[in-house]
Image (cartoon, rainbow, N blue to C red):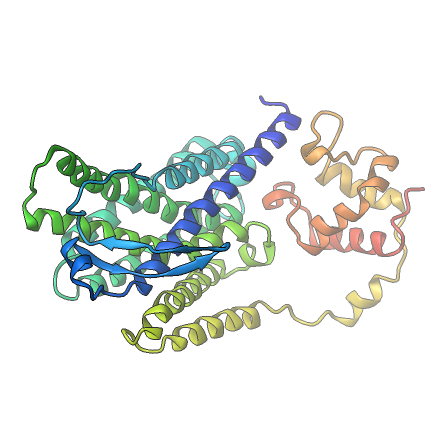
Length: 407
């Protein structure tokens, strides 16, 4: 078993890498959506003769830029280095999967399984979690290829995948710990995003570039299909982005994934993210007179978020709970809770997060963190694996609010 200290360092470094490459991928995705929606059809005969479908002028960092787009492939030879936008996607997937493996799969009994939700063995839970990633991609890909280019194809694809995502969210919340369920749904969609790049977008582009270099003229319909399919999957990726980011951030906020109706919360927040993303996508076209005012999408998305906030608002504390905080709690009492609920992961043998709670000195040092994790965020014990009770959480709260004595 990996030492807890090295496990934490691996977790930190992988998370850091994952965030960095994800920023690069999402940033390039957002930029190209902006670019596509701001390109203006060229008017000059020279530009049309080159095969340009759109261009724009921009200023940034003291310089002027003139991005130009060719719908299929430029008619003239590319005489500079051709940059491929794929390392951002692959690096995000690989670092994310490595982090998911290290934190959730390697520690499945702690992070993936909540026996109060569904009691099963780590190997079966791990296999099921991985199947979410594979099965979702298979369903999504088949739906896109079957309906994507038919009449009203995108509406059909969107409707079917909405049903699939809602069902997957419900199922994940019935099988896995809440925190893992939220993350798994995000990982499921993120896997499809990266698979779009790996299986369709880049291979299509490579065939076009190879034909250009060899001087071969591809069939116009074949060329158009490469462009249409790549564009389709790229657009889908941009709508997945905000829901995926929400699921990745949600594991820091236990009030989301510990709610009894957490799958509904998850679905509503993902819908809000997709609606807000639609606003940003369409607003560029609106400014050029090519689309309707998209502010309605933003308004509905924000309303959905406020509805969730209202749903999750905790009930007012009872007077008894409010006055209970005034009662002092002796260290001997709270130490009994630490010994029965916390020492397994924060004692002499194991110190997850480099936290020990097996002596008065170490308890005093980490008192604020204990209060935050056990009482405020309620993230500890993880998935309540040691069965801490509400009475014991209240005991820790009273102990901390009365000075956290260790004598």
